[in-house]
Image (cartoon, rainbow, N blue to C red):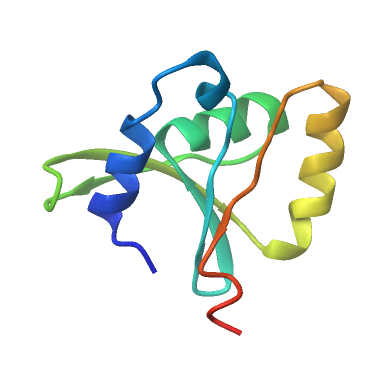
Amino acid sequence: MQSIPEIVETEKQRTNLFECRIAKLYRVGSFMRAYNWSAWLFVKYRGNLKVSNRRVKAVDESVAMVGFPPSSIENILLRVRRLQLILMVLLMLFFRLQ
């Protein structure tokens, strides 16, 4: 599993419009989480998700995050497809944890 500083750095490395339209998901325990820009994409195109902001000492900044159970991914993807958003979901370490 990637650490929060690695995830924050990954979120900052978006350099073009295509990358800005990709939401990255990370498995944390029994939930899927999206951080910073990815969290914003999920809230913008999915709606009713609550954003949590947490100050992370390792990166010395506030990190926005949303979380949801893996069972809701299908519903989220259906709504996103209707909105014609190009969404690529990367399930980090998902297969290694099983």
